[in-house]
Image (cartoon, rainbow, N blue to C red; front, side, top):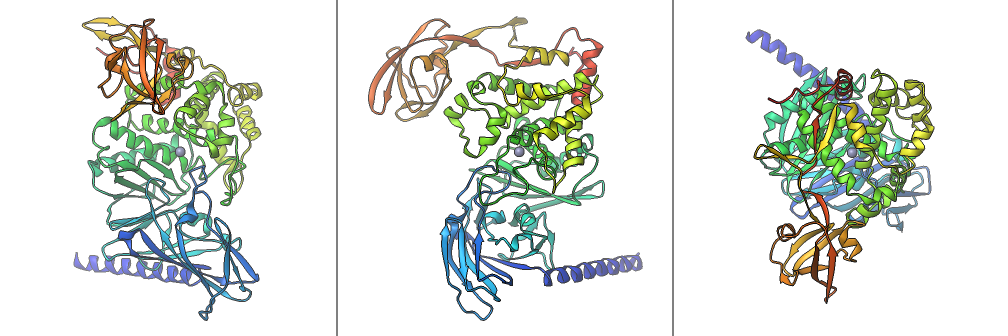
Length: 611
Ligand SMILES: [Zn+2]
């Protein structure tokens, strides 16, 4: 046994020695050397030193990007830079000036090896750009590492200097030590964030791929459960694509406070959640659905993406009318992984669908903007009251467009093809460095269905049409219902509705949104109005629902409110809204065709009748 172990250990040592040798070989030949010294983590600071190859030009512009991948909005990534110094190899200072917010122009560079150094302030956790504190650092290089036109295509070696107990992780390959990473070019560097700190670490392998789970922060998560489910999740991609575009994939999780959301990267993702939003089933479902979404992105956007964002232009907005296909279709396809992997029940899927339909029905913006327009304008999109009333969202409306397309393809091909085949073809035909256009998607649709999709596309992607949810669901043997069982009887009640959403404040209830064409909209109420009384009596509740329960649809109600300190009153004519939440349920009588449609759509059997 001992002998065997010795041989085994020697073998491992040899493998490590060989890989270190090659890593050193690569590192010796890296074109750009990046040193990141995190010496004052508690002050959110790092010192960055860059060494470039000998320059040919007299003058070089060094840039930081104006946005980061996965977030189609310009960000002030250059605002964290201070103490910028440019030098040559003999320690002579080179003169420089800033020519715009994100460009440092260095002169006298010809024939010189340029060294840059600067301080980075990193305290933007929720933007998933850069965050350093005494327990960890998360570094998306687009917010940390500068580049020039020449250096973008060159290999980068990143050496981190971090506090003693910290461990470092990234989708990038390791260099000659555990805090060193190698990127083949700047694009790979900025699409492979680095997480370093005091982390919980796990790994597993599936289909000869290594997966890592790195968790920063304490919280109510069960990492064993996460590992078990991620292991199932990653295998489900085979239902859409024929292979994996990576050898290693890293799930980075931030269990924290003040940050939520996630970002996809080339072979990694960072998922941020409130530290106590992991344990109950609803919260956990949110986590695993996010993981599914980000994993789908590994193909959809990281392997194939629309013209307009290929190659990424880091200096300005990258326009495309197809961002709904990048985001909304990813939200749609995430359910394929969740359902086929049995990570979500059919009931949970129906609840999620019902929520999406409800929010669509309360989104008046669908009449003002198509998904193609929303895609193009993603860079200037706004959420909140204005967003809801006058815009659509590439995620939620993109999801619905994908759903419509999926059912249309299933219909036209007698369940032989589906929207999954469209994505399979996009991967096969348009993987990077290629890109696809709207016409290419239309071509794929024609190849799959033998039908022309021009008019469908104009209607649903460039137009704003009402969606027939009833007809859509019926194809798969499902229907919508607001009824709940009340003491054994089905009840389908309605309640009074104003169209207002509020938040509590010490002055009263502050209006946060007024749905377009609702009673409150017609009454002229708007956001920031502060409601203090209902029908002449002070409101002390945290929201309006309790008081409105005393009113019936078609009754009038008077609100007293402050608008910029001026006292006002308005009387609204209440309308009706369903008292219960919308539910999606299996029809009582279902044909075998409907059951087959359901199976072809979700990959799972039609739910059995409940006893
Ligand atoms: Zn996404």
